[in-house]
Length: 395
Image 1 (tube, one colour):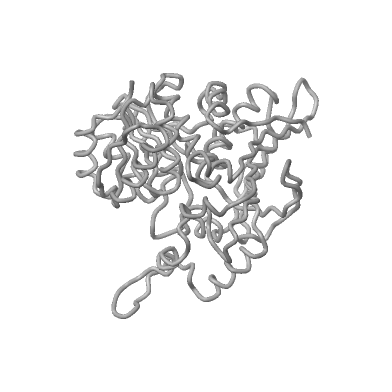
Image 2: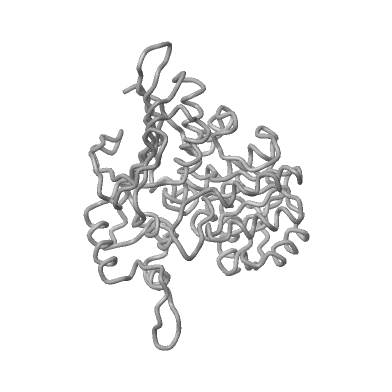
């Protein structure tokens, strides 16, 4: 019987709260907090309707550490789940440290003023969390998150050593709109337009955004163009599996998405540099976020599937092998279950499963951890049970 405090009220938080409510024996008390309490109330009402579980709601400014500490002190949670924006990771970690409670998030800290995807700010908390006797689980989403656990599973069961790793993410869903992003538009566009980086022979190689593509044949989806990007899990995976010589991250984009994005870049709407508009300072990408469709609203209209997985090459018993571990998720099935499209679902379910690992004592320790540092087996056993069954095949 555990209490969780969930911070954030977007599409992913909606999934997290629904999934926690489905395991009422473990998550005996759920408190949902956000800057906009009306969003929390809407999620709580839907959870009550679907599961009968009461969710308490609170208003919180996640950038205000004293306010966060006060809320944590009132709720007395066994775990704080940060499902807010990555800009707020350090503030929430600071509050967890001050009170002394375990922490979980789904994406690495990102400074608002520059598009940087690094773990250095959060890894710097290692000694603080260890000395306090609490733990922080970083990146308990899908990518990062499940992809890290897939890699650990490959190393434990399928390959004696991994020499090449490709993380490949396909969203073949169609929402029928001219242009929309499947998660927070600001974070999504910052991520896509940042220079690509991949790991090769003990160094990072940087290339222009979206300049490298190839075709990949996805199970149940078919052949799609995939584009080389940078994603934060590469940083932790090459640290914890130093035998990896090449590590890359790839994502699919439709021509329609890329054409719209190019136009928005050309006219300056994706910029994170402040400008003065009618006497006040605004940031173009934040204005763009305000006018684009809310990703949480896309669930009812999105059809198709996602496929995310890891292709790993290496040695097993002296023989070279290539294995593919992947998960396929259906947008319409997700919407039927929790009122969400699959992008939010595939992030929210692993957050709930990561919380189970901590609360049930299956993943133990004090300090700051990435997902691949723990035993992958109990996590993957739960992942399929809670809605994300996965497959393994040899290529």
